[in-house]
Length: 71
Image 1 (cartoon, rainbow, N blue to C red):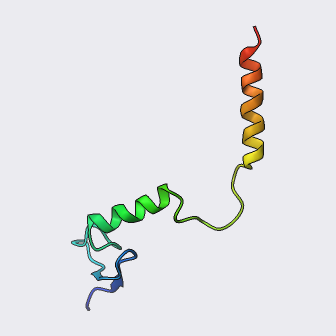
Image 2 (cartoon, one colour):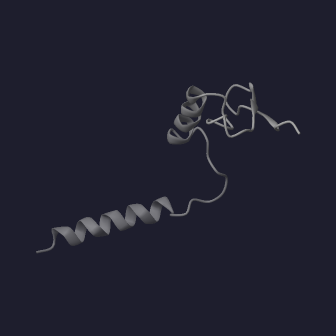
C-alpha cells in the first residue's frame, strides 16, 4: 500500500506522509518556518472570540499598575 500524499500547505508541492518526511505536512524546513511566521504575525488566526477580552486585559493591567503604586 502506497503512503498517502498530501500537498504542502505553503507551496502545494506533494509530500509523502511517511516517517521519513520529517517536516510533514510541509515539504521542507523553509515552508514550515514560513507557516510559523504567519501564525506569529497573526496572518493565520483561529476563528471565534478571543479567550481573554482585550478590554478586560487592559482594565486588569491598569488595576495592577494602581496596586503597584500603593505603599
